[in-house]
Picture 1 (cartoon, rainbow, N blue to C red):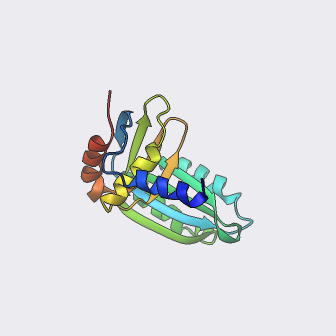
Picture 2 (cartoon, one colour; picture 1 turned 90 degrees about the vertical axis):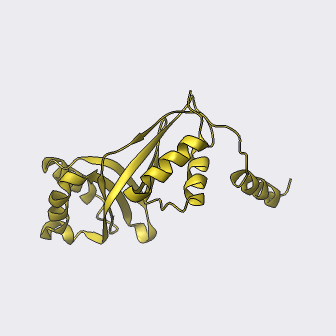
Length: 173
């Protein structure tokens, strides 16, 4: 089978009108969050542990965390914090000792984390989640996968539509 045929088959499945059923045990939605994204320059990756430690000491609760290596060996960070402590986080990120280490700091108010828990290792949950959100024109700000949960960060204004769509897209025991 040529490689192109496999790609076409995947695209057919993603766009299928009646895709196969996938079971979830539950969907959880976080309280209101603030989203922060920033980069640490190459050679500054040790700053990440200091930043997380200082946020914790400031009683800023980090509910979502994602990091990956970007271009030019930058470390790109995404995190969500409880909305009620966003002023503490903003003051922290704007402090002189922190601002000099951060590149391209982005802050967004009013997001929520949706966490999906697949049923006994169900496959293709992320594929179905991302397809459904794309079809609903819901912007995904962050995504994190672990062994038993897939979490995505979306704007609060899209949460009701996303949750209703997820309940139609997946099966719950």
